[in-house]
Image 1 (cartoon, rainbow, N blue to C red):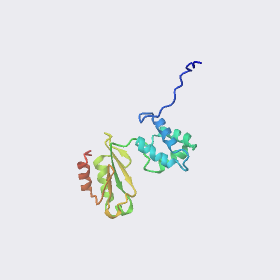
Image 2 (cartoon, rainbow, N blue to C red):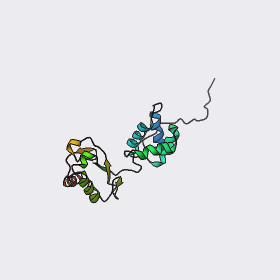
Image 3 (cartoon, rainbow, N blue to C red):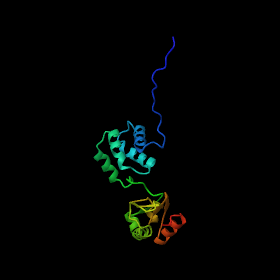
Image 4 (cartoon, helix red, strand yellow):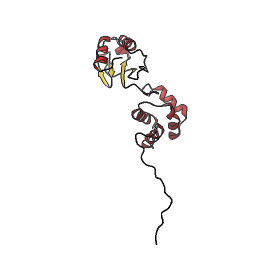
Length: 172
């Protein structure tokens, strides 16, 4: 008995990294399915995958995790780590915690803002550098602490910040 071919059925294939942000977010949620309190791990994965948490994916996250949009939005906006716009190609993070403030972080922050022409949480107009503040880089004994593209520096003065930005090719 011959078997006649039935209608063609397309099976879903794995999403490539080039898939839409919404599809990529659904894949991330699927990887965390069944975890208790999955929202934070999912958001960290979204940030790692996309570079930021696009406000357009908040309804997708809410639906996939059976949460309200307000719940997801509240978490995204509460934690400074979850930016809602693409970061620059490079990042500069300045510690603003008490230990660093006591040894001159305010002067370093002022220099960074003036030199780059942006405030904390903003990216230079050319999309090159995002300036962020954090409230501890874990380098308290060597404050003020600054992180440039994931590399931690201690005892940073305004002049040393200039040198780091120039040496790192981050001239604004």
